[in-house]
Image (cartoon, rainbow, N blue to C red; front, side, top):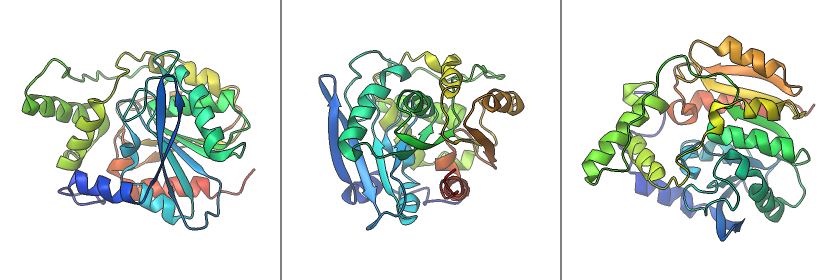
Length: 292
């Protein structure tokens, strides 16, 4: 069994524990709102840390990371991205490029003009790259976890299964479990009841199912205009990266702010869930670097 919370940990009790320690905020988003959650050390000693989850996700993509990040002395802000979780649909568009404007409105409400350190996972990494391009004053450091949109298609087939047409709960859960194994996690031991419940909870609240920008080089284009330090973390066994890490790093080295690309051993795509300990060491090592 890999390090981390017990595999039989009840999802609802863990959500209740974390939500009981969080402050909930709302910011405008079209006809509705973006829902933000904030966890904070008593006297934060670093820049605010903003976490953007992946596609078909929510703030719960960071379930195993919030305690460690707050314990490091940070104020942590995590939205449900527009169209996911509890947040409303974005007012203009249905892909990553529809997110930066409304996220920046929320950040202005929560932080004023203060800069932050921005961390994005998967689809959220593309959103983070676009936000950093459009709002250079906002982002002091950018950390991208397994970013798509770098113009490098996967070398091996990845075949998620459709589930929206299924009515029986057991059939739906079986498809979500398959997709978790196919896309997100490397070890069979990581496919725990907690992981499966999270996957189902998040996927069934995804209202942006036809995103396409991840298959383009849109993030690479945005990073050409990002001058703050840019770090990339990814799981050693991430199927989206397998067999082409050198080519991906070559793309990133053409970006002015790029600092380093770092593999986290023994992990798949959802690296911060599967290997939280090594992930925290890598991320905090990046965030605790002296400002350039």
